[in-house]
Image 1 (spheres, rainbow, N blue to C red):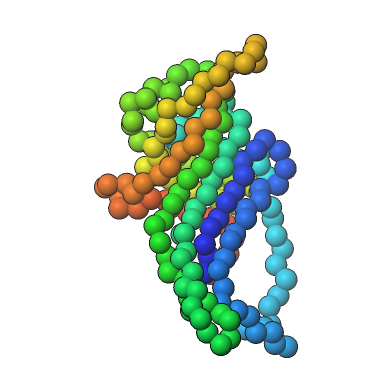
Image 2 (image 1 turned 180 degrees about the vertical axis):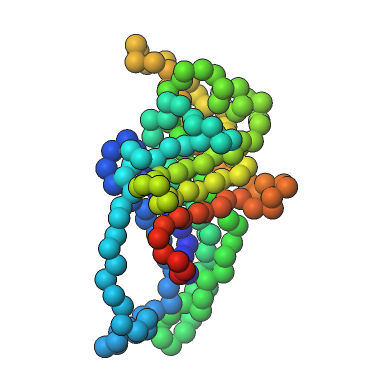
Length: 183
């Protein structure tokens, strides 16, 4: 079972995600359970083709960030003669992250102070018709500490956390658009 997906957001390099899984065991065999797999051509997203949007509008001056989707699996560690776990139960879903923002205005700070939830969209595209998007529907921003450390500008880090959107009844939506007809 997939436990967590974590993506580091930065200005350069290829987009990388870390997937944490919980498995009961493996059995090595001479053949694939998927039949005869063929090698796929992989096109990688780059960091600089990404953007973060707040309520559908590009959020300016984001310098870094993280996005984490976690099922928080609870491993059922029991005493068994084969030493394996009995399984894993999904616990409380957590969609969290962090955005580092250089201030051009106080919009995000005002929203954090007021406790107003926002929608964040993390999106990367290769070309028309090829994109990866995570929409986090109900994000709560904490009031950040704002150290002023010199002439480079005021920058703040928001450690955000999402909750279920009351009208949509979901926390996050993932969308991939590519040339694959079905999975």
